[in-house]
Image (tube, rainbow, N blue to C red; front, side, top):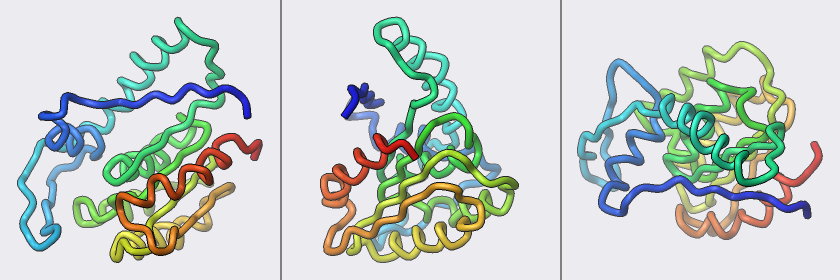
Length: 188
């Protein structure tokens, strides 16, 4: 396996709940905060996905290029949960920005499944490779991921979809990591 650089983007622990909704959700005229786990979600700032993409390419990538040899043609994006939503939105909105995209347990439910509307606006086949993984015990998350794949199957050139049986929203991360690394390092 060739050397790789892995970069995590985070926030101070106290800011995580608020910032993750802001950073990982796309701009919209209105946001629907659904019931999750039997309770109404607190309304949080949302819609900062464009700023996060800009931050990645205007701040993080140049910083890495100063310190390391970076192959601009092989920069990939990985996200879990709301981060997975961000990955899928980025794939549909900025399909040539990354070499490969990995969405694990993507929160497709967000904002009344707005990602399904984004799919309908996407016009061309996508050359970048996409990996979607979800835990078999995630209920609606599995259904949403399967529907996403069905709605986009005519647009994919290279994708993998994996349901990790008996895994939940947290346990799916380590369970899929080996598969994800092979996907990222494959030449397809």
